[in-house]
Length: 331
Image (tube, rainbow, N blue to C red; front, side):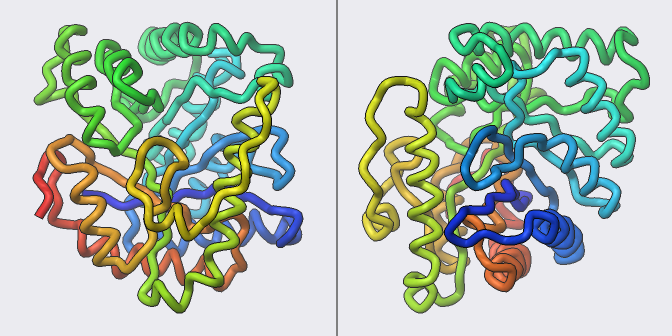
């Protein structure tokens, strides 16, 4: 199993940093992750967050491409329905060229009403739009619809579809599935078969975990817990913005840490590298999950905490998962 680092460049008001320094430091962490053996770095997207959440992941991926030479660069995810497909095809091709063929294009349908309003896009048609965009991207790249073409003959598209229906949809299109949950594998496999794709040859899964890895869980918890609480609370608050639903009550990070996952934002994986590795093996067992990634920084952590977390993931967690093959069972 391969390991990646996940960056969203959050800059919460409570812990605000100089934005230029934050972006520069994050690029340094991409270089450091590559030096320490990480297999990939991933960049996420949101718009209008109070903490300046990264809004343009392909732009940042281009900067990271210029600072690295081996590590793969992924978007996890880019909200495709907010963009014109031809522009997306060109931007992705440019990043792939700059990086020498290292781009993994993770796409999602999005969910936040204010983001669709900002881009004058139809939130009710987001899944239909994304399905059409995938086919159009393949056509534009394969038929010379945009120039220059990507370096990779078939640039990987990863679809961030959640749940049984989403997994099946990704399978029918013959694209990779951007979720690390083994529960999605039977539905994804069925979709591949329905779409005429051989699961043995076509199935690819990957995805991120809400997790923090430390050699001193009890000692670090009082320091880490406020950042985890902010991260989860802000996601939950922004999920309902524009829907008329009331904001959810603040989470209890202690409960998140102890709770088994029941869906998005329902729990937080926290523990030693050994504990986290065992849980990753369990949650991905039997599914063709080839890559998992983890937040480098949780909600704007200080630089020293972020750097230590990157080192722990790369030097302590990565070796524990190196022998876990896609489709393998939990040990």
